[in-house]
Length: 374
Image (cartoon, one colour):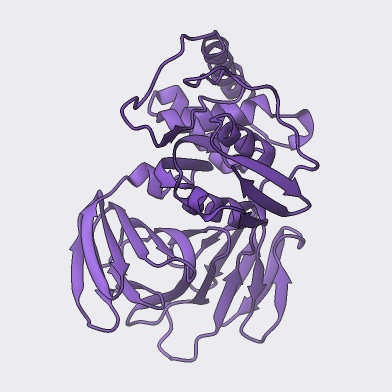
């Protein structure tokens, strides 16, 4: 997590508005904090907030009785992780520490920016500051590891020749882009976004491949459109998540705030979403259902969150975030069901150990390859 996210979490913790998942993330960060992490917080803020976190951790770390969950579902595999430093209890005794030939570090802020003239900039390596200027817009890498576009004159453009940029997030990466209209976009691993350096007077339009969380700045005069290969999402100002990976069969749009219209490209069929709803586009069929919004945006909040997910789906997320290749030596394992949560900022061994502790699956890690076994 960057400095800004940590401050926001501490603020919510002080106000008592943190969700359980956010508390677990904050605890995980604090237990792994080192003086050389260069996280700067006001002294009085740290003194009060950190003391509260540490007090809670001491309470959480006390042994708890074994709790059986979902006993009627024999095929269910239970994954429980309260937080780093707390105890894991399953319906069987806790296994010994599992070791692998090597470990894999979690992903981080990594991206390649392609400017309109074809120049490529590695946002992973480049220094903080002004990167370029295009069509009256400054392109800046901030100290928080974000990419920000700032119009020098604060206006939109009347012409159609506005330069387009493209940001590509590799496996093992994530990045945040702040567009000149105030819209904020978080991009997940294996995603790309194509967008103008400033918007036209008619619309705000971006093109997405992969997954992104949008906080769109409100502007009733300028609709905001997100184009993917199979659909268009249109909004005026709202918060929503779009998951549109080309290697997944469905495109999922989850609305947290405001309203959006989702249109399927081939049939032009449109659906309106209300907060807490999700559209699923599969086989050219667009359906609306109630959403698990915490699960949909867990990646943006620094968590893996699984609610009755197939191991195949889980390992697909793992492969993107850790930049690893996953192979199943038995295809039946792909349908194993898991539920639980763990911070995305742990080494891969910690996630695999929790999955292995269920006794139903095992992993072999060699280099950046993972084999899933019985």
